[in-house]
Image 1 (cartoon, rainbow, N blue to C red):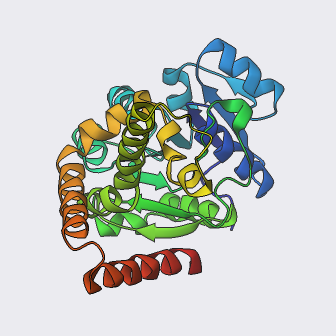
Image 2: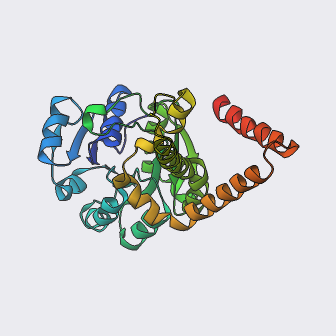
Image 3: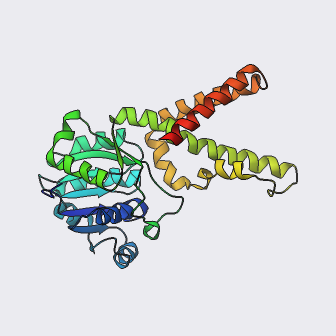
Length: 286
């Protein structure tokens, strides 16, 4: 794809996601400049690692970038949108990597009188954070969801160029509207975090009450509690901006657990096992 529009990329938040996006662009053949917006310490480290070419303020980065990529926590993205909207040039595309989309896209719609905005959510990550964990292969083979406010937004030349880069870095592009995204992700992502966290709490208290230690934990518990290591600092914004959908997902999960408890050992238990295994196979086949 000819690089007609995107020659300078500004990444606000050069941590795991933002840093990985920068490295992935480089590996995919991007030859333009990559600017970073972060703390001085992070910017210095990002330069040392070859993640960015230079560090700038948000105002300068928004004014200079052809693509502005917001990879901060959700609350920070929401705070940044008005300033970015004031500084960008008419041809600039702004996108984000937040885990919820409706509130972000609605806020962008209120402020972006020029330039384009496209909500985004890469379904990729690690337990570790920071620019030291950035990985050029992080998005490879992973779904990258984009959430335009209007379907026609996808036909804008700079949007098509950006989604072309997403495909070049190895992502599988999926277009959804913001409301649909938040409802679906509450089931396919957010519920898993809540279930893992709650499981960790139950086992912690239950084993402690037996006066035993945790050396009896098997690989299944290790797998099931991997997400429980996530920081509430990260999840606080997600919960705040997708509260109702997460509650609905938890209600459905609690209802299923109660039915499983009430029918444990019956034929219905076998059906639940079969359906659970079906989902596990479907996910792995993709």
